[in-house]
Amino acid sequence: MRGGRALDVLIVSLGSTGGLRAADEELEASLQRAGASVATARADAPRPRRTLMLTDLEWARAARAAAAAAIAPNGAGARAVIYSSTTAALLWPRAGAIRFDAPAAGNRPGRHGLWQRPLERRRLAETPLLLPWSAGGLAESAPPRAEERTLVLPVPVSPSGAPVESRDIAAITYAANPRKKGLDRVLSAWRQSRARHPREDEQLILTGVTEEELERSGFDLSRHEGIRVAGVLGAADYRALLRRARVFIAAPRREDYGIAQLEALADGCQLVTTPSPGPYAALPIARALDPRLVSEDLAGALAVALDAPLPDYASGARGALKPFSREAADSLVADRLLPRLLG
Image (cartoon, rainbow, N blue to C red; front, side):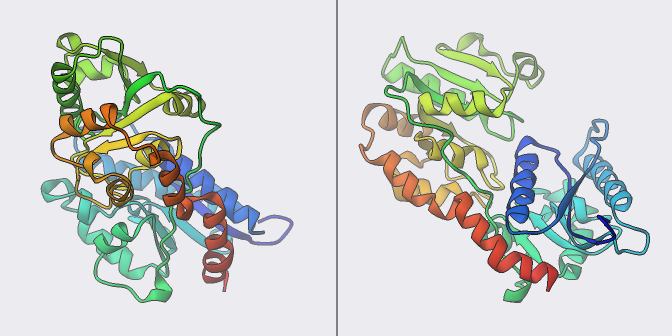
């Protein structure tokens, strides 16, 4: 309550990754620019667990505790609630809108989602409003929903600064959770590309991961040349590297959205990627910009990007990303989201 008036929107933020936290911050700011009073209830990170089932349970409990503490006992603490991710909504204390990149139905196959998937289906049926990040994420949350109960709400992506005159970094990748991100395939492509065309002065920069984490995940970089581990960087430092890189290389085994790839495109990198499964928002953009760079032959695609880049790639990417701009997001929030939440 603020001055005796109910809060307009409460965001229950899981915040289990940097991308989720950034998405929630963008949504809160956009709602505020639209004139809504907004607060965010952030889940406390639980201790690490060995399985995805237990990990999701601990995060769902943390999200419930955060939501319950922020919602008044009579339910009048906020006019509307948005749960950020289906995991945040699994044990909700009150029904609300669900915003998500991908459902457990898609990213928790087999034993990894034994309890999450059936409960998720219930929550998706009960929610008054689905807010997927992409049309692909909505498609994975089947069965189809009535149009008034869904709104695709992308995470805004914008250039981080003026382009540099000369891009002095050959390639960069984001390798947090290196096995899921397919870092083994990225390293193999880099090694093959260098073997075909030796480039002694060129480097592949690994970000989002430390050398210690790589060792624990079983990655031995001693047999790879031209690689530098930049570690876990702040947003400004990371985006500054993107503005210097010619290529962003990605080979995720599944991609739930791909915010790192969209940021790379926004900052003028060519996107070299495998055609990974999942609601991969950057994939159709990459195919349209230069289909040569989307291939299971990652080494061949990398060689093309480094040796024969299209001159208008960066300008084409800026045009393709207009639906992901902050202005476009603000328009969706003001004109279509708030009326549904508060109407």
